[in-house]
Image 1: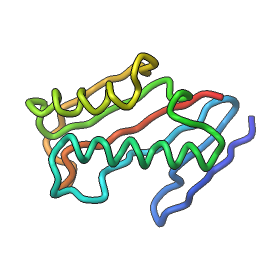
Image 2 (image 1 turned 30 degrees about the horizontal axis):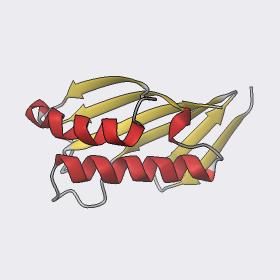
Image 3 (image 1 turned 135 degrees about the horizontal axis):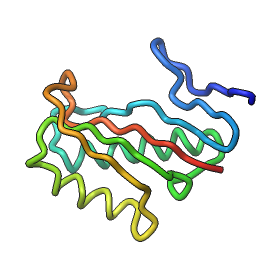
Image 4 (image 1 turned 45 degrees about the horizontal axis):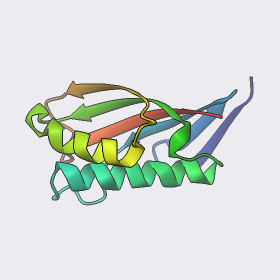
Length: 113
């Protein structure tokens, strides 16, 4: 199966495609001084942009892994999440972690063609 790598950064490719799947590596917010809601909104927008560069959109996202430093802020993340996806939400795992090096949240997604 062919592998296509897109959107190269110094440490990773933002999107890796194989078969009908596209994997978007961990994405954090540009401004980590903002709260959970704005960071989540920024991340989801960035993910949508990355997927757009390979011909996909938010409706193609089938699974997500979310890492948060404070599960007490999960409701803020959930509000943005449901507003972004509406009724067509992907599966999701949300995991509390001790530290992300500044961000409150990091999101990884898998999309399907």
